[in-house]
Image (cartoon, rainbow over all chains, first blue to last red; front, side, top):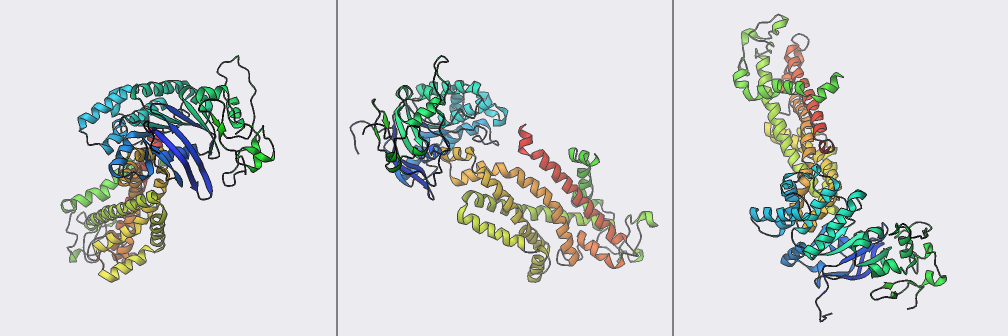
Length: 318
Length: 279
């Protein structure tokens, strides 16, 4: 698979993860370019968090590959693994759970440096100082414990820690959904500013489309372990193709209050991944179901009408 | 009302512990009025001072004429040493195994937890009998028995906490940062269970003092003529009607020490509760 241009920052190839009989992630393909943002969107249980863990090497895939800079993440060891740990970082959802309550901010933030690089105290302090300023905190706050901070500030600490090793990719696992609505915008702006400054790529995991619109260049919509639609952000919001995407979109607030739209309410619950529906997995809840073909045949991925827009649905011609 | 005040300001338990455990244990050589091993044959079975005795033997003497007060004070050394060393060893082993079992899960966990079940199912007195039979009663044997009885409680409790802590995102973050398993367990998880270990250890002091007393009473603990508290109680049991003070005062010492330590442990548990600290 040698190509003329440089390898993508992140690429997933036929990525699968089974837990016993449950296929949490069932054949994902996606890629992310340097300095760009890909959002993975879906309801809870769709496999988006498992996807994040597979990329971070917190879980082993059952089959398929995750490539970072063209290297298979799950075969790395030694120095290559250390480089990977420096280049790929994460910010988790809940800043109350993601900061060790027994550690001071300095050691929380410096952890990736201390583990992977031999730097003197002075140099570590300097890097911590810089990165704390970059996330909008004061360097002297490095002495404090996490419980002395609010949710937004805690998330800034987690972001600082993710940035300190100058990573190329940060996995953002619902990074604002545990925060007060009033500070979500601040944190999302911070992510965008930092992306420009550090030229870092984001893989953003989210359960609603609303927060992703502002941040993502591309969006992958997941349902029961599979990507049902994949499109550039603008195109997805303008012309959603898959009935599931349309339903998700109708559940978000309109960008402008004068915009009118009807909310599509999906019947039933997400089916159990233990026993996924045959054919198109969305067929039991689909408001646009065509008929037996949806129950019998898994829809192939097809052109969604615009550049880079693909959709897996029988409504559209192959 | 009284009890809740005791728990908020543990001054009384601390004072009692200092008075009957720590100060006598550390300074018995200077504080005790008599040599605990010396017989005063002319003053055998002297009653305590308020029961018609003399100020020379404040709490009376036993049937060999040894000063009961001095023997209790020297006995505190054994109570304290056995609690401190036995609990330290038991807590260290139990905490380490609990950390490993809870973090590694799988087969390691199963093996450790079955060992815990076995250890908890063995009666400690029987265990002590076996040790005493094998090596003869000794100070070291008592410490081994204490550690052997306690480790399983620590292992079970710490494992349960680690199972929940390991799922928290800060552990995932530490792995993403590239930390080794040893680093994650020792630097990230251990500091979050230290409180539990300290509180458990404190609460076990009472249990250990009672265990040591029981073993000594049965003659399978610290050997005679060491003035261990359990032995002192045992010494007086044939004379309990005529010379009640021989058994009574060591018994009171055991009661007060255990009660105070438990009150202190409760208070410590409330104080170190991380939820309360973080508020």
